[in-house]
Image (cartoon, rainbow, N blue to C red):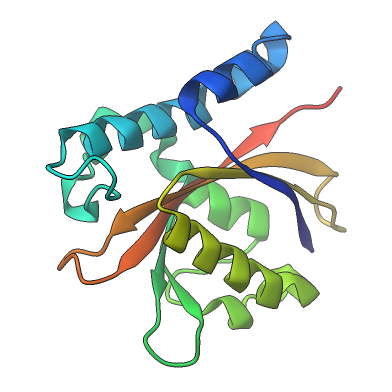
Length: 174
């Protein structure tokens, strides 16, 4: 089961300053910063600086090292749920299953957290700012793992709704 904790809205400077206290963690979170930097660059390039960038503007070729860590959530029109449109290979590996095309309520690894995670996704979409949460996973087949989970709102391809572009990045706590 995955447990999500301590979501917080962050700016790039605050995030970098918060984690730069230790070189090990700062180096581990470079991939998180790469995703946030890309998201902020796309946001600044848009006409309305307050709007999230469009997913259509997302440029995978500019961030190839983090693509296995990326996920994309689409808000469903009915039922208040979200569907995983894309889950990178790293995510599939740590979950021991491909969750692409599943709704959040269908992802058993979330356990009792799927309802609160849906609410969290709604808050990210409404807030229009990137939010970072931490998470951890413990299971029979893998050792205890900590993650930083980036959630960044993006406009859907037709720009009629807000989706969430995210990334799951491991943190070693040794």
